[in-house]
Length: 413
Image (tube, rainbow, N blue to C red):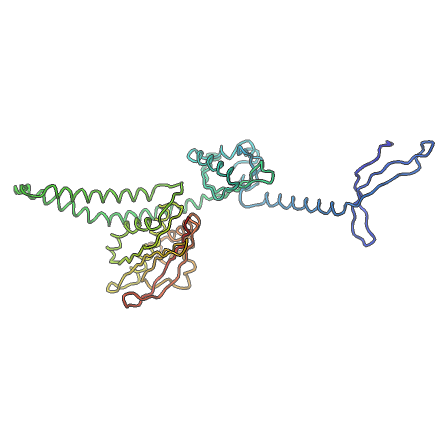
């Protein structure tokens, strides 16, 4: 009954060819001189193109919402204080918290005590760079510790952040298994390294004791003997430092020399290789510096060299040459580390599986198949390098050999 015009009313009509048209109309009553309604005045505008775009946007929004809701990784929208504004089902499943519980807390509040400072620092990095990839931390929810990997990027409004989260607890357990296996290898290597220095110290101490019993210490170079003992003791102390550096957690990247890292690795393994009658042929002429974690690189090199050690021990006769070559070669800003043995190579039918978790060519009582898989992850994932393995036939000292060759390519800063 109102005489007010009806504005912005959408109507659907069908064109002569059958396609749908959207018309935006404004309608008002027409009165005669006696104020009687005699008709309706209508003005229409074809908004089909605009409506088509609107429907496309709505469809895309629904698709994005479906992707958000059903993604296997945890997804959340947080504000600049890391308070949760929106979470998907996977985020709830990973944390074990309901959507209501998450919306009442923050990402910071879920951080384990040891990771709180790092979490605040990474937010500062995000504010400067606008993105964060593969940040690992430990969350505590419902009294349970969860290892997660986080990535973050701005939402279009630049006032909220899209947070992606993966549960890497199983990966962390896998890494710990690898670390324990490597620690066992390290302890074995240290035992080999300590044998000779301890023999020297024992011999000197026994010699002094015998001379003292027979009253022959006068004229004996006691200072020289003590100096020899101190040298051996310092060497033992250095191996302890190497072991401590190897096992300690290292969260911060630093500038590393590949050559120095290889030299430390070879120093740890040299005595054990000598005990196995393995000849290490080393040429580390070329070098490059990268950002990385020295203990992880040492662990990776140890895993590969130990794999070569096992290959030559299992496949090379005692009267044949047991050889492991460790070389570096640089081209422009890339350094290739090559570790090659004389163990006959890896069977072609399994060589493509060599970096798969728990794959091993050894009997289960000898190897777990963890080492090379973790090496692949640490080299490619944490140091942005590439690694490949292939069999190679080569000549050395006019003799023909066949063995597996691992090549790691690092890119310098």
